[in-house]
Length: 115
Length: 112
Image (cartoon, rainbow over all chains, first blue to last red; front, side, top):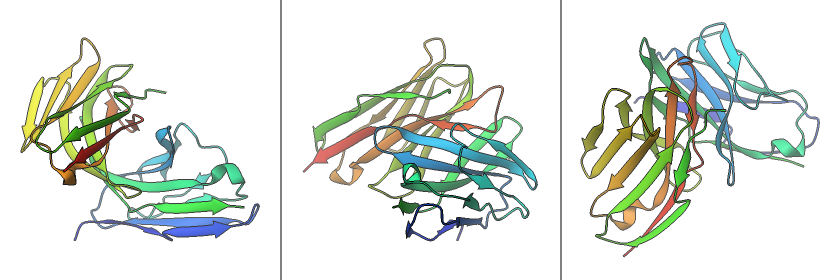
């Protein structure tokens, strides 16, 4: 089954404690991306990756890091989480084509609370 | 950022009625996509319309695109209670195809 898998689904952590949210896709997609969703703000892009070792900042990259060492995995790293990073996070992947990104497949989300 | 704006923010209708949601965006696009999100869950792709297309259908969904007005609409016909969800438009920039940028969404409530 084609899917994007995020872990964990729920996480409560304390300010400053480094954490990683994993994302894995089994569709051999080139394009992967992280979004955060906050009430009234829609989905805002954090980072995206066009392929292995190719990543770039989205609209709200501050406080986050990513890496793309393998095509299937795109972890999101919070080196020193703060309460304003409390949010619902989504990973997505898509086939990148020469005419633009095709439909994106989303993970089920990670609800992060930083206290 | 190149973010779409959906209108209305919330829509409440009865089963069997049609629901229309609008999306406006700011810059030239390569394609525009509509997604659905059930409460707190991942987004599901509904339909993609390319910049050179004006209308597209998929089952009870009809999407239009007017690039001169930088706007799109999603029509759900004969709505059902199961259509209750949030709907988002997302644009792919013509110049920066790496970015799939989402709007703020329309919350649709369909009452039985």
